[in-house]
Each structure stands twice: as structure tokens, then as C-alpha cells.
Image (cartoon, rainbow, N blue to C red; front, top):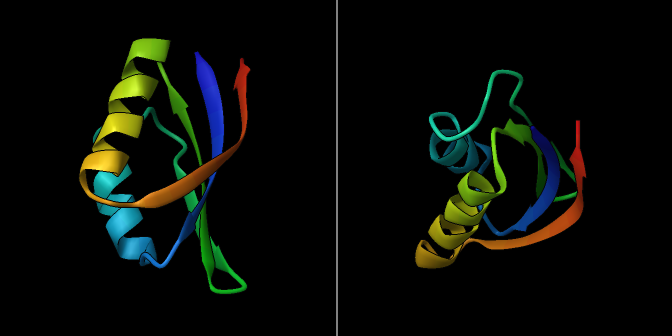
Length: 71
């Protein structure tokens, strides 16, 4: 299982939750700080993480990963 921590710009918290809720494992956390949205979530595999990244790009969601670690 992988734990990912991501920063988003110019997007709402609601949009990120809608986007990630069905693609991640239980324990999704999304919060707003200093006009940026942050998310921490778990995925079952690297392939699923790649699909999530591709969907960010397809929807023009600017993101930056802080950390991806195996848990």
C-alpha cells in the first residue's frame, strides 16, 4: 500500500474530494491551508497511483507530490 501527500493549486476542496473519494482507500484527508488544498491518501498499488495522476492531468488539476511512501 502507498501513502501519498499532495498539494493542489487553484482548485476547491470539494473538487478534490469528489475526484479522489472513489479511487483511494479509506482514510482520505483533504484540507485547505493558505489558499492551497492538500490531500493525504492511500492507494493499493503503483498502477492505481498512476491512474490518479493521469486523471489529474486530464482534468488540468495542478498538483505537486510531497511524498510517496510504502506503508
